[in-house]
Image (cartoon, rainbow, N blue to C red; front, side):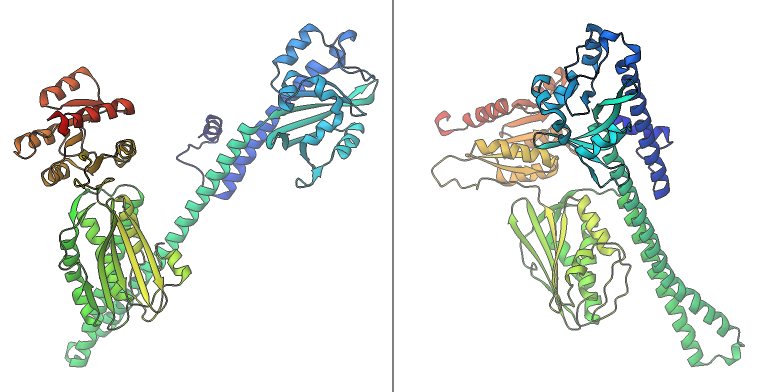
Length: 590
């Protein structure tokens, strides 16, 4: 945020983190900022005009404007003063002849006085000026000169100056110049206000964001109030009936009466559990929004997880004779990077929705699709009522439920939480749907692997495999781009040290690039485990670190790293090091 904006916020009693949310406070604050800059600008301009240009304060030989068309000649002192000004200053006679402009004006117009003077008042056409009464009306050159010739001043703090093909925001001040009480011309003072406009844009954006946040909060609380009242109404209503019925004497209780009481209690318990579910999900959502929900990203086996979730949803689907088709039932293990507990929560929510919004005796299909090594797509397809275009757009908004073939009871924030959870785990969710046919929810999850070159050793050209163990996806992407200059190198990556060890034992790469500061098992521990295993102990390992002090370099050499690469990467040196490692393993060097 701009320092001038922060200063004004502090003067008003606010900070960038505690912005006002109501419209009245914002209007008062914006008025205060506008008044501050307007007064400061006018005071400075009046000082410069009255202190520098006033004929009464200058010797007769230094008067700026006289009733002639000759260019003004300034004293040496006044020339220095004019040259020091950052504001553009021009003087015109009533016929529109330019008789003076300072160095700043020449810079603004992009030409010296000798080039500008023949243009005269046509220079004013470069300005877009606005009428004082109706701000949307443009003030023409003729209207301006007529206005000034009558002795009036004109100010526009929202003008623009055309510079080439661009418009520069400027504040303009026009004042009549008088000689012997007669108006003989006018002076123009203008200044670049791009910085002020930038501050105004920041203020407007902050105001709009605050209004959106306030509106979203109000809408959330309104919806929350409704959702809480629904189960609470059932609890209080059936509780009241139970109280009235129990007021009867016990001897009058019969089987039908007992059955009614049992139904009341069942309804109260059902509403209570629904209320508890709603509260828990709202707490989950608030923790996610506040950034306080912690996840543990690890390598998760998806085939078993899908089977587990399908078995949990099976009793619910059987009640409506809905068939769950797990297309991955006999598939080999598939892995993705996620928090297992939270991913299970996501999948159960999608499956339960597929049951709730499905038709009687419908079907649910669960499948995995992988089109790229970096991502794996989990799809849940139903044969339910489907969504129209508007419903698809709003389906992930909180408290969104749609009526269809069956009215569904729920919290209305399950998909909102699902979307937020996947975003935390670096995943995505989307939906495709057709009314009367069904919906397909697709969840994209990172696998942690990037293999740009197929591991095909039969093409005659020698191929090398580099395993990069790094928790930062940005750094993995950077190395992937760098290694495009080495088409003979195939890159695979691991997100954690544990996954790196697993891939090393599985693929036996030609070299390993190992980040030292990994979460959990650090680079030194990974190297130790690699050296202990018979199948990986001879693989050359390069250390990658942001700490280049002598102690770390010495420790790395002692631990057994072949070389130490320091972040940020020197690309030429990095490629030279990689080439050196693979040169040692080329057939010609064996």
